[in-house]
Amino acid sequence: MSEFTKTAIVTGASRGIGKAIALRLAEAGMNVAVCARNEAILSTYNDSRIMPVIADVSDFNQVEELVNQVLEQFGRIDVVVNNAGITRDNLLMRMSNEEWEQVLQVNLTGTFYVCRAVIRQMLKQRYGRIVNIASVVGVAGNPGQANYAAAKAGIIGLTKSLAKEVASRQILVNAVAPGYIDTDMTQVLSEQQKQSIVNHIPLGRVGQVGDVAELVHYLVSDTNMYITGQVINVDGGLVI
Ligand SMILES: NC(=O)c1ccc[n+]([C@@H]2O[C@H](COP(=O)([O-])OP(=O)(O)OC[C@H]3O[C@@H](n4cnc5c(N)ncnc54)[C@H](O)[C@@H]3O)[C@@H](O)[C@H]2O)c1
Image (cartoon, rainbow, N blue to C red; front, side, top):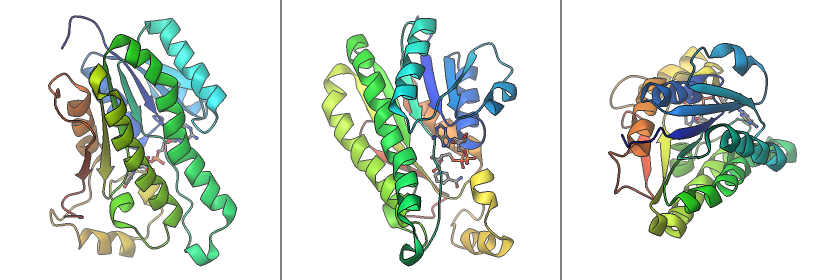
């Protein structure tokens, strides 16, 4: 750990993977601004290192406001984890334009907005770590998730391009692609669907939020000085 206290932003951190990442970074000694769309987030944390901010990542003005609040409070932004994400599943034949647009707007455009809003500060600092949460679905595709898979594949292209743009300033940008992780997002699946997914996972179990949080912590820590532009699956071997 460096001599100064790092400041992180984790989006979509009211629950699930985002919350586990926020708590892991706070445990590592960072100040962590956590954002979600509603006030529920305010009641879920009880940690002096954590600053809850209400912001919708699909609205650029709210993202700018979030970044300004963090800079006012802590003076730097060292780490950003773009985790906020939604699903609106449907077969492409039945998918409405709205279902397509909502998922692209939150998952992909929201990630772009946050990267754009923080990158100037990171360039000034000549230091930064960005992790974008993608999905193995963005690599392998999935029936019923054309919108989600396209957004997650887009995140991978964004990650690789930005990594090349900012590497000379010691800003490392990576994507983490979870497989099937046990969260509210996956609770909508039936027991039968869950079992059939587990049957395809070589490690024979669904993932836990901590499995993702540990990797994210590694990537944003100073132990990682040489990994950038990568997409790392956390999926128990589901996509090999
Ligand atoms: N659970 C899985 O199996 C799985 C697999 C692959 C990828 N992922 C990805 O991991 C991330 C977290 O997933 P999760 O399972 O914890 O989901 P979740 O639904 O439990 O949590 C999503 C979080 O994003 C927030 N959010 C949604 N829209 C937002 C917006 N517009 N602005 C700000 N916050 C917003 C929600 O409030 C919530 O805190 C997502 O990007 C998801 O696509 C999850």
